[in-house]
Length: 227
Ligand code: ADP
Image 1 (cartoon, protein in one colour):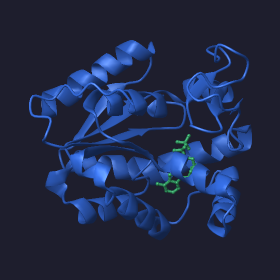
Image 2 (cartoon, helix red, strand yellow):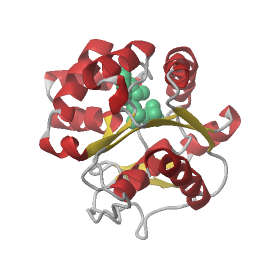
Image 3 (cartoon, rainbow, N blue to C red):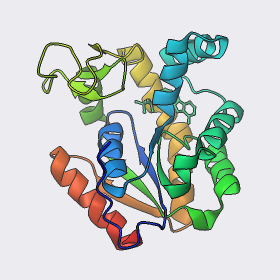
Image 4 (tube, protein in one colour):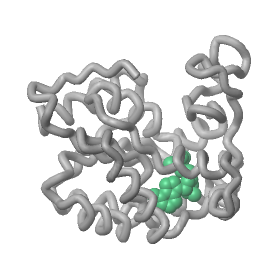
């Protein structure tokens, strides 16, 4: 991946968390920010979908939970994220997308990496009626996770521009599962977001608007903290 590292001292790692309810544009913006800051994009949703594809016993259990719009246990998620952050590329910083998702996961992450080793958490704010509409038109590459939509499809019908994989609707983007995930976000993830606010690590960004201007707002907020 071509990454433009804009930091004055690139040897210093940047460590970012991206929050946002389903359909806020979190995944799309997370990919852009990881490229910009030259850090791995660590998406727990992508990692779980990869496990599902591998067809392991764990993958089968995860699929049932995800398709129903539920959450994988905090204990399992901590194991997955600890292993991922121990890989060599994460020594140069990271961007977490989809973790932490509960207050317990937030506390587990801070215990794992240390409070001083998180530069900033950004929360992409988008009203619920806007996100329901966005999710129903969302399509993803089943191979690399690239995100498209009905209004912004790949150049050839439904073949991923990035890897040639098949672009599909996610099994958990059905209306029932989406409603459940949005409710769980309010119940479980909002307290985690608030907790980072109490630590003075949170910036809230308006996620309504075109993708480029949202990216610009995110970059301005992050640069003000780490630049
Ligand atoms: P979305 O934010 O649209 O729900 P993700 O790709 O981030 O999509 O996650 C998809 C699903 O994977 C979640 O609905 C949940 O079942 C599971 N998942 C991802 N991250 C976590 C996590 N940190 N804790 C528990 N479950 C998770």
